[in-house]
Image 1 (cartoon, rainbow, N blue to C red):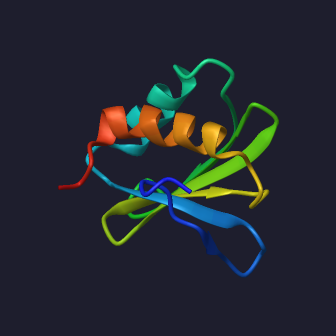
Image 2 (image 1 turned 90 degrees about the horizontal axis):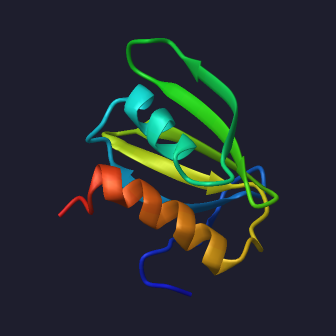
Image 3 (image 1 turned 180 degrees about the horizontal axis):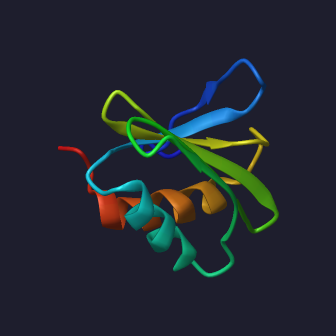
Length: 101
């Protein structure tokens, strides 16, 4: 497993595979994700103040992202999703959000 990826199984069985700093708005992140060839945004919910959830599909996998404690947390529904796919999502989002260092 790549050192850049997390492997945290959450209560619904999905895998948290990344955290990146919340250095861009939800709307910027949504627009940026749409630039990754093959991404389809399937749900976007926000209170327009403190929190949002976004669901998207990519290469046959279902993903969710939400904001927690100043970071975006990224989840994949299938914890056995390939590292190649996870890294594609991670690296694409990191190009907008930075490494958080």
